Length: 238
Ligand code: CTP
Ligand code: MG
Image 1 (cartoon, protein in one colour):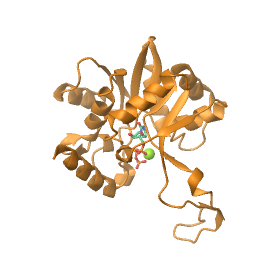
Image 2 (cartoon, rainbow, N blue to C red):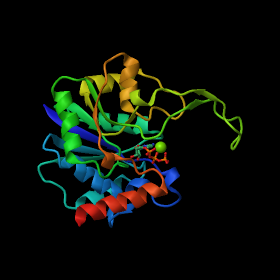
Image 3 (spheres, rainbow, N blue to C red):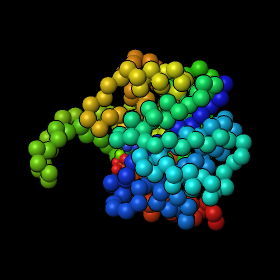
Image 4 (tube, rainbow, N blue to C red):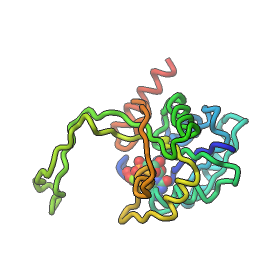
């Protein structure tokens, strides 16, 4: 039974600002998506990578895969993505061959995740956990608020959860295939859809566990994150 990585890369990256879709923007001269694919293929556990491309960007992504050196022991598939991250992940799952038993879902927007983190998540699933997420303690205290009625209005605070019990979750998130497929088939999420696959498994009532994440698995979301990513990459190359 194989382990596959599904990489949702179909987002526009609105918070990063106007321009090329986020996954195709460059980091150290190489598209963010290529970094993310290499990070997953670097794990000996991963033998297939399914890239979920921007809806009309599949040909361009296939071209990128041909252009860049990638490990040859790994297979690569490209499928078009959907309107939401949740839908994109589902399209990736639908493309998996039958012999895949373990699935890692990894944001293209986390290009610098270390291979040790990928290995640790895959190993925890292989050891029997149906759902595994890498996560870190929070630096900031978090408050729950009543969302503002209009932008810029003050927001009443409802609660301050104990910081020591909170974790910021990253990817790759690892799953027993049947568990993740069932979550995507049965769990309905309103609005923008689920931003986190493990949350859908929780809604199924199945156990989800956290393993240590890594600072370098941060998500490139806003312009400052690109500055940090360039610095991390430069330090690695030094
Ligand atoms: N994603 C996707 N399909 C979508 C939306 C998001 O595959 N319809 C992917 C993104 O490409 C990204 C990951 O989900 O790799 C995490 O999402 P996020 O960081 O929110 O990326 P974007 O949705 O592209 O960014 P934004 O929310 O700022 O537009
Ligand atoms: Mg998004």
